[in-house]
Image 1 (cartoon, rainbow, N blue to C red):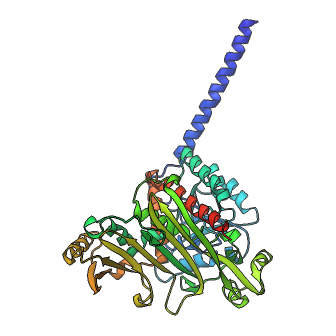
Image 2: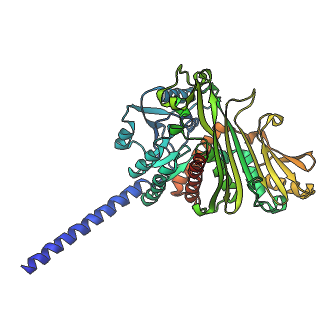
Length: 468
């Protein structure tokens, strides 16, 4: 009897071991399936619910590594139709036409169908943000890489799900990456480069809440042109429970740049962040303004909660002051209805160093084009030092020059070839992500810093909502 029991338990142990080995083999096969070599067409893109025009902009150009057949899953309606029209426009463009072949599934069960079909190995999501964190987590659970438009999370309650998604992605050998286009704007790139030249910048000052070491301010407009056409925005874009407030939406870019410029390629943690103050306020839209950008004659039911009289109040604006590793920083997001004539979305930034300040301005005197200035202090650094620094930068960016435009104020001359514009930055970020897929990993600082970024934005919104 005892011998029979021993044989029984031995059989069970062998069966369990066999199952574990089968699971290991299965996991190994899944890992092998996720390896990219850079070969033509190996990246098979899935586009999920493309309700934001950014989803179209990543397909404004072709990529050898990306298969021209793109599977699209979305609910039927205006958002999907606008996306399809945008891609058709790219395919029929007279200059550098694309050749995307879209396979479209329309239906309210679009997400469940995407997970069951698993028609690709990279999912791009750029639309309604209410469920975006859930989409990211469940896509990773299904073994799909994620290339996400910002923001990946819009409230503190969903932040743990984002952390879980990154943890699971690491276990499965998958890559999650968000589309940080502003890192590719030339004046920002050069501001970062010059801040790393001690002879020019000195050291980054710690700053104060009233005079931060680094300030980023972004001004956006609800009414604008995209790819030469008036942008029709979905009504949900004006519901911050679906789109996200300014502090967690556009502010994602600003917090990212603050981290990227002040502590380049350094691993950050949540403990490095100390919030000082955060506030939020509304942009007010009349029914006529709302109709002009949505083509809707009435506010949908879900927006009525934000209507006072007949004015729609959108909490799209926000300001955050905080410390990052002891350095004071400020990030402000402002939404106006429409830009002045010839103007576009604008960016202002200042980095305060012990020897000079590095300033980006994009106002009327700059013809609304981003312009980088160096403001020296007490005649230091000298013209010779500045010219030498710009000459060194010209090795990587040929054609840069330097012009004195005021008392201790210098303008960095940047050739037009580097000013490719916001829409082109989406292609640049996509190329970077494709390289990461080929490498099989992100730089070691990217993932922890993405998590710190979204911790900062979501905690800032929580703090702002606590204010009277």
